[in-house]
Length: 488
Image 1 (tube, rainbow, N blue to C red):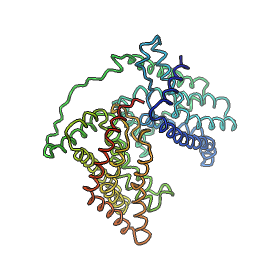
Image 2 (cartoon, rainbow, N blue to C red):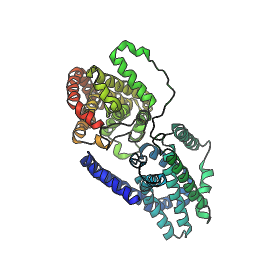
Image 3 (cartoon, rainbow, N blue to C red):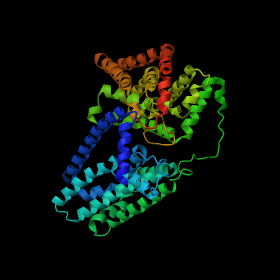
Image 4 (cartoon, rainbow, N blue to C red):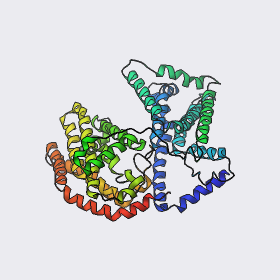
């Protein structure tokens, strides 16, 4: 039966309306996966000798920080790993056991990249341990590590739609990390003996394997119990909460659109995830402004960071205009509404998000006023130029969004096309070039002025640009509606 399911998946892939895009994206994703596999394999082979050179015992050091490694893996999975998807509607009417369908769906996640990538670290590291005389216990330790990785895989499937479980978990571990950094409390003193015991004993490695079996059992029951048309596929009914946001009424139709977007951001998992990721973008500049990475320590890369720090929400939210409204886009387009006001409401939302991000990022003043000025001029460029480019790119991104799912917060396969790639280039290359030219030809202040003037110039052309963008959206309207009807 599994062989039959695989054949159906294979046919679905080749018969998809977006087959060419799927294939191109799979190739690019494969190259990216190969890069990370090579990195993990090199690290797994070399980390033993790196730690020896630092005067540390390799296995003991790895076991010390494994708790953060595993939690970090779970966080990455929560944001990026896809849930197991099988089109069950036509299968439920056939003489196929529900348990078979669930086992197949869960089995698909076992060969996920998020599982395989860890093997390319732990396997070379274990081989080095065996070569260096650590004995057969290294194999037991390796089995325990892979069991914990797969336990993470199935645990993520259970908590993926449960924010009340995930966020407190992350907050707790982050608190432990901060407490250890400031030497208040060291959680690794309690977790290290457990991980070390998987090597020191001949039986403790069985605990992660048993944990894996238990979590798989609960995952299986969780999905099996929802494998019904009247439960798992039924729409959930939640208690209605009234949010009038009456203060926006003074803006007329524009205020109505803004109210809808604010409610969308507050009520749906996918949009809330986007807000969280845009908040995390604010701290992206720490990689650049702390001089911790030598390749980032140049003027062009600094303005690159300034663009991202202030424009996290603009990029993560704006790239999917109008896909946020894909569930009711046909109804929206059948109403007597102004497309200009619809786009203006999205623009104002991105502008507000950019201003808020810039204010929050004021802590970068710690690194000097010039560092914060990079963020400020980046915000001006984002508002004046990038906000228009993001909306223009959105006209060609015909990706229906499932607001109940948190994955794909950074993009989707249909977002990958030549037009959006070409439109994306000025978002980063132009301000980097302007600042670098001003910096090297004159001074840093002239570089700031060049970027800021470009943003102000773009803002003065807003009405003309909006007219052009509105015309493109109207031209693409019917193709967008057709794309939102696609199931594959």
